[in-house]
Image 1 (cartoon, rainbow, N blue to C red):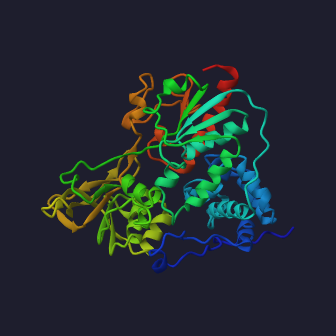
Image 2: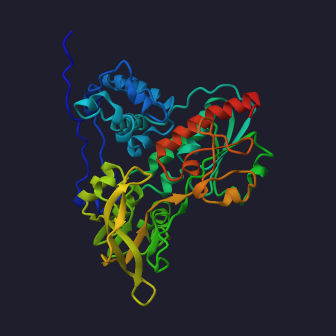
Amino acid sequence: MAKKTIIPTKTPMSEQPPAERIKNYDEVPYGYTPEQAIAEAKRCLQCKRPFCIEGCPVEIDVPGFLQLIAEGEFQGAINLIRETNALPAVTGRVCPQEEQCEAVCALCKRFESVAIGRLERFVADWEAAQGPLPVPELPPPTGKKVAVVGSGPAGITVAADLARMGHSVTVFEALHEPGGVLVYGIPEFRLPKAIVRRDIDYVCRMGVELVTDFVVGNTATLDELLEDFDAIFLGTGAGLPWFLNVPGENLNGVYSANEYLTRVNLMKAYLFPEYDTPIALGRRVATIGGGNVAMDSARTALRLGAEESLIVYRRSREEMPGRDEEIHHAEEEGIQFHLLTSPVAFHGDGKGQVKEIECLKNELGEPDASGRRRPVPVPDSNFRIPADIVIVAIGQSPNPLIPKTTSDLQTGRRGTVVVDEDTMKTSKRSVFAGGDVATGGATVILAMGQGRIAAKAIDEYLRTGEW
């Protein structure tokens, strides 16, 4: 048998040129053609022990769907993915595959990994082009009712899995549109909202009821929901932004990334006045932070017309928590990076508008609890960066509304809901939780993985009654 010839690098995926894309909100990568997808899938070695499955939080049969793509069986490939993933077009775009399934690909020992994420995106988009997504055959109803609080990645995953098990599911969403962070946090140019709506519509056509403008903890408490439902899953995310707590942070023009991105993505401020949500436009916009949210904010500022968009980050390029692809795209688009720099104050123009950021230079010390080298301020290194808009993107915590209205729901540091990681059970009987509300700000795919764990545990609880 002839030895397989391995192509050492991933099949390239074409993109909008940087000079063009900073003027629009269209998606940056164009995706694979069928020929490119087949060629890339054929790079898979079909390992006897597929570490890529172990590296996937939702345990997609990666070699299985890659083999089907290699054979041109695109429908079979997407059917296989959907057995464990209700949002393949989403995860194919925003999942950090380079740290998960692709990181443990056997090809990585000598070459570039298989482009698993790009191929997942390809078959999901191919499926959408064929027409409405077919709904799987569902089992007879169990008669059990589950309330899912939050329609982000964790909540939608739980809802889809429980519907497949025959349970009646109602999803309660506080905002006027479903999708959670997928619609309010991630920009259109990285995740088109039509894709999110398509996948959520697929879940609803499985019998899941969706109720919007329903704020649990206000419209109804958990205890009130438990009068009508047999179990509850909390997937409310992490919508409470962190701030620096430095002088001048209350000046006009200083936004949290949560507000900035919600105004633009969910409320369509980039289409003002067609949509009636205004947003302050700056000539020189500075974003504080180094994660994906910071990259999203800085890149959005460019598309809103900023002449200059800056990233101010306290560590070096190597320590940035953002995805390599997102940082690379930001660099291509001309974002300026001020590294090893910590803001210590904001200064105004005398009329209440931010004008400058006062900063200190840092050096890197020993690694801290995150495993990254700790930034150590350099004494007397103060300097100022002009900025008329500042976006603070340094992290977020869960909203405290539900814990404040639920006395027996245990919370931990930074307000996260305490869960048993094997079952996602909370301290309150019949209540489960997962995603950012349990972990703090994390990734879409991690939230989905916890949603799958919770769905299995909820099903067992509903069938046995054992807590």
